Amino acid sequence: NAGVTQTPKFQVLKTGQSMTLQCAQDMNHNSMYWYRQDPGMGLRLIYYSASEGTTDKGEVPNGYNVSRLNKREFSLRLESAAPSQTSVYFCASSPIGQGFGTEAFFGQGTRLTVV
Amino acid sequence: AQKVTQAQTEISVVEKEDVTLDCVYETRDTTYYLFWYKQPPSGELVFLIRRNSFDEQNEISGRYSWNFQKSTSSFNFTITASQVVDSAVYFCALSEQIQGAQKLVFGQGTRLTINP
Image (cartoon, rainbow over all chains, first blue to last red):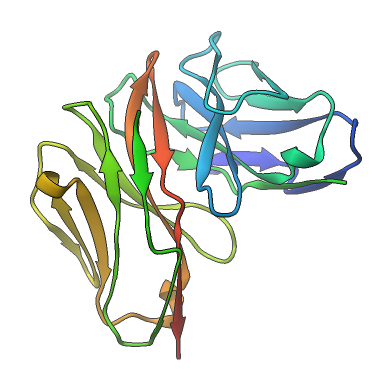
């Protein structure tokens, strides 16, 4: 099993450019998440999707949009990148709906630099 | 609001020493879960353990052990006889149920360096 796959692994953007981070999971999980990791701040939730067809804002949604394309795929879009969005982005999934408290499975991360 | 505090930003020890990583949490929920994740230098997040709020038994897995104390809202992680491969950033996290999903609230992380 591949688990959670994120693409790309690295990306450099110029301020104002747009891009989409892709995420796919093959574990038939209902819920998917996007987190960002910044030094000294742990991981913070950007957006999540409890199930196919639903998306909701997390703790730090400004500057981002998401699409739950189907049960497998959950993409994160930066419409106009800013230097403050330089971070490591993690996609995660969990089989919630089969029990609160299940572990989240994380992708390998995308290291994004906005110059 | 939920909060997780890992007061130790960085810890450095010599191989074979025991080391404890502290985690203190805040929540108003009566049912919750606590997690530890490891992030090695390669960058991925590796799940280590999950503990629910009703189970205060300590857990041991090889050289790893966890001490959950509800009275002090702490969920500390001890590595016995540390090894260089234990060098990583360790995150403690608290679950929060949201709109049919589960948010993880992470601590700031503790960077552990094991020196040979």
